[in-house]
Length: 187
Image 1 (cartoon, rainbow, N blue to C red):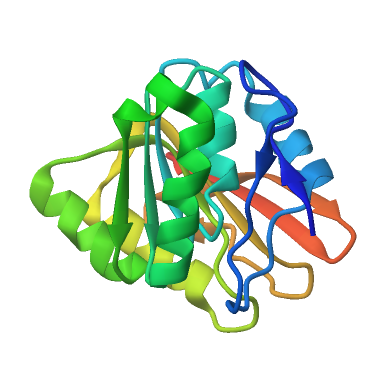
Image 2: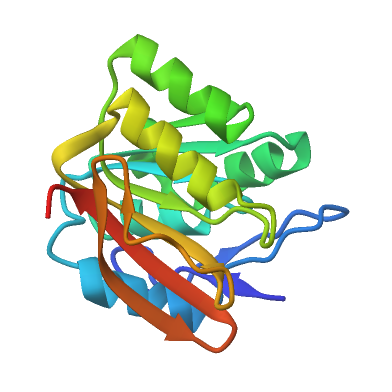
């Protein structure tokens, strides 16, 4: 599967995919739909890309003017590919960080470091309740900025709750078998 940056300064540049790793990359049309929804929030935003895979979401955000991006994946092949893909951004990649760690552990680490994020994108493997567990941890560790939101990609039949702790679902979109659930603080 070929992937590319679909908007912003680096539009059209190709992204490499990890080999020998079972990942389900977010399709270009779904990524484009997400960025159409969040376009005004991206410039100057601090991005967290959990279960980053190829890094496509965070790289897309950087291409569209995000201030910084942290990519988290526990697979070394994915980390290597993200590092390679960041070369496409040249100097814009200087405010990115790669973290080879389980997503839930990474969230705890960011809490200890006092980091908060404006946009958190999570695309865990389907059917394992990982999305819900990550949102619980994001809420408990308070790493989502006050104006921030989390975007959770999940299988359409995996129903996400309307409320997880202090996080509330404010939007859902369906694209084929893929569902996007948007969460923020308060109601």
